[in-house]
Length: 153
Image (cartoon, rainbow, N blue to C red; front, side, top):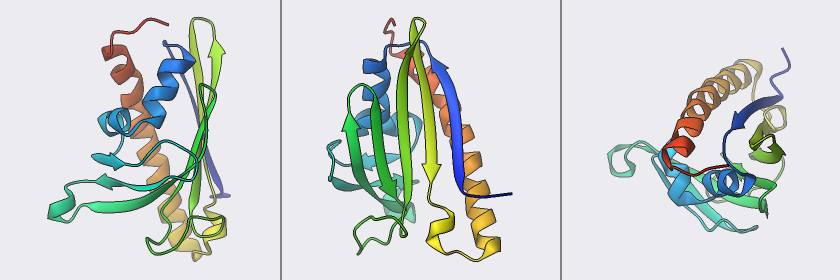
């Protein structure tokens, strides 16, 4: 197996504008993915996302916005060392691409850069599988979250 890039596609019954807002703003993100998110959704903005309780040993992950082109693309780098700028080779790149489809949006999520991190094979496979499971779980929460907002396509 390659362990290089994770790709997922889901259909969301909402406009690209709504889906973009949900995948790019910290207020929405924390409702379906991390427990906390603190960043400005503009290119170059650095911040963090938190899994678990920050004050009780939760995992704080550096997060840097790479691209924000409403309502088509939102991308960020994460998992880089907190004392380093996020660049290729020290972080993973996540991209949300949104395409109008029927009355809703086709959302394609890509996470890349695993091999470039230089992990030994066992660590690479473990991290890749962990991220696959994470995206499968969290993306399954995205569609019902958007549906619960009560917006129409």
